[in-house]
Length: 145
Image (tube, rainbow, N blue to C red; front, side, top):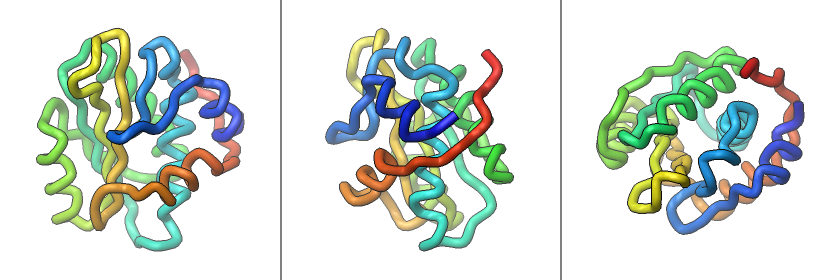
């Protein structure tokens, strides 16, 4: 499976607060593709072997986080799962630990939608990071559903 193809065909786009879209479009492979593309877009700038992951309390968030974690494991990364915590708490803890993090959260949007927020070890991703994620073309093993 290819990260660029999975993301491009998903209908999910970056907005002002991360990648957002319909829950139905955040398939396990799309979540894995976003995770892998995010990490590969920053791994030359930072040294890390662990990624922090947390969720909000939306019904779809836990399954999305599991898919993200499976994608990250394909890169031989450890995943620290913090469960349901506020997004700023995850970002703060990950920055203190000098590791990247991902938050599965839809924030204020309806429950038929959800999203992914990405944080570098030094803070929130930039527009250039977003373009690197969207432009990445990385092969990965499709997840079993």
